[in-house]
Amino acid sequence: MKRILFNLPVYMLLFCFLPLTAQTTYHVNINNGDDTNDGLKWSTAFESLQTALDKAKARDTVWVSSGIYTPTKKYADKYDDGTPTTDRDCSFIIPDSVVVMGGFPANPSDITGLGSRDWKTNRTILSGDLYGDDLYGMNVENAYHVIILFDATPETVLDGFYIVGGNSNAPKTAFYNDNISYPITHGCGGAIYSFSNITVASPTLRNLIIQSNTASYEGGGLFNYAFNDDASPEITHVEFINNKAESNDNEGGLGGGLCIEGTTNHAKLTNVILSGNSALSMASSRGGGAYFNSINDCKPEIQNTLIAGNIANAGGGAYFRSWAGTTAPVLTHVTVSGNKAMAQNNTDDSEDGGGISVIAPTGSADPVFRNTAICDNAGDKQNELLIIGRGGSIPTYSSSFIKGMDLGGTNLDGDTNTELMFAYPGNAENAPTYSTYYNYQLRLESPLINKGDNTYATLSEDLAGQTRVYNGTVDIGAYESQGKEPVNNETIFGRKTIWSHDGYLYVDVRETVTLRIYSLNGTLIKHIDNLGEGTYNYTLPQGLYFVTFSNGTAEKVVIR
Image 1 (cartoon, rainbow, N blue to C red):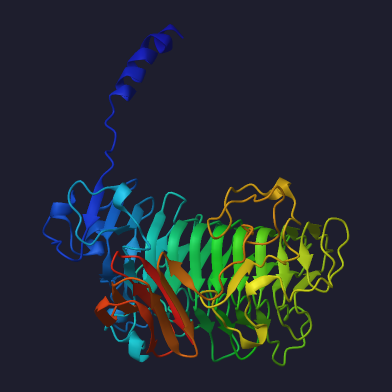
Image 2 (cartoon, rainbow, N blue to C red):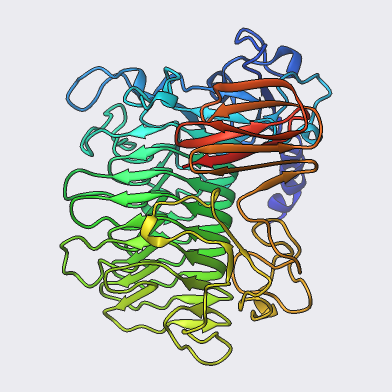
């Protein structure tokens, strides 16, 4: 005993002198970097993102300047059948516990730090469009997955990027065989493929726009799968727009925007937009906007979120299911509207639910709705909300509005008129539709104003970054009224206004500006210097565009 006590300070002293691994920040600048540099400052930045990712170790950080980056690294050289891989097999492969941040200026100096970062103005685009021809409808050569993550813990952070052009359209049986513990199927995860065979799949995703990606089976925007553990990604300030999981056979079509699956499911979504996504197949697709699935308990938490204009055969907006446990998602300050379910010829009762489907094939279905609005969705059997618990069902509603359901208590009556509820809502029959074109902020006459419960208003801002609570009592839904009528389909920058209508982009300026219009993949479509005061219109093909003015202010706009 004396010997142990005598040596204890020695062991403690030795431990104190063990070297700690230094955290390194690597810099990437496609505009003037060089992969022969050391990447340790902006003046010696790497040119390619993958070079920095290959250098990075756990707890390192990678800063990326604005520009368009395409993936360059193959996960393996061949498939299961021995067929060689191609350029389409290139992805950005991000190591666990590495923080990757975009949104830095195109020409930074060595003093440029986080204070100069603006991810929406300094667009850092990770694109699967390898040939740069998506503007012309050519995506057959696009990368199967823009980003690949393995065993991602919450310390794996992706922050400040536009992720576009992934096309995971191969048969579901097309696997890599480089490492049997980490197979990759090219039918899932067009934008992000996050997989774990032995532990959690729980990356941190924030400040992202995930747009116009496809998968033939699951997760057009995000596929996050934990085979033997918890699937619990934390997703904050992320938009999933116009992603597709569409199959031409009787399988697949799960989660057009995102698909999260695991032994258990505790995903967290905060300040998220799921809009214009689709999940379709020949039989029973599910979760146009989002699909949450697990073997045991499925208990995602969703807050300050808009689910609008999505389409699937079942769960047009979102679909929740636990095969053997409890299905109990918690939705707080969520707006679910304008989504559509098309049950096809399927007679299964669980294959419906225009807005939300909550399914428990053997256990209990116990969803919780707080300050949440579900209305004006379309389904063959259930327009708004479908709940099926074979082992019972105990839903909880607090200060919420479900159209057609009289819930009593502090909830709004189910027959409340929705005509004056939102500024410019989409029509579910036209789904998929984009929130960038429609507007779900509250009109001054909206019956959702001041009808929420302040107990559940735990965030100080709404989905648009506006003050919450305004005027004493919180509102129902993702947006908080600010005591004035919201602007319809317009974006205003000081003395400049842009909007779209019937295939035209309209620009109204009250000062001389430089105008630039970019396609989704960053191609410059139109550049006008010295555009004088007035109102102008430009004909553009259907799609999404970025409009920028002289000072770098940027906004996306949909042309329909």
